[in-house]
Image (tube, rainbow, N blue to C red; front, side, top):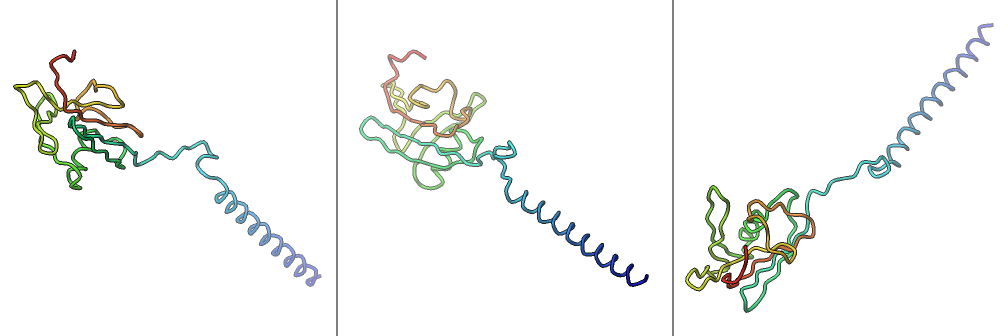
Length: 151
């Protein structure tokens, strides 16, 4: 009788081990097979790609730059200046950021020629410090006569 108990105990022990191992393998397989998109969770991009164009009326320089999501056009300008790609002089005030010069070309107040800020081919409705960049944006600075522009 003791031999039967030992025999049943061994079979029961082996079955328990098989069940435990099968359960672990299934869990591990599910974790490997399921990715965030299958679970309905989208991974949010940490960086976006934007383009900066600087058009001084005679030539245009174009820079593509990866920048952290949530940054502004002003952050973009500062990052590119830090990298040595551009140079710009600005003033910060309680109404925003005002760009005085880009790449050593200053605003010309007497002739009404200023650096104007555009996003995706449209004059921006906000200043560079308030514009939150979106993936694929084209930020452009145009050095133009503003005499006939309606703001």
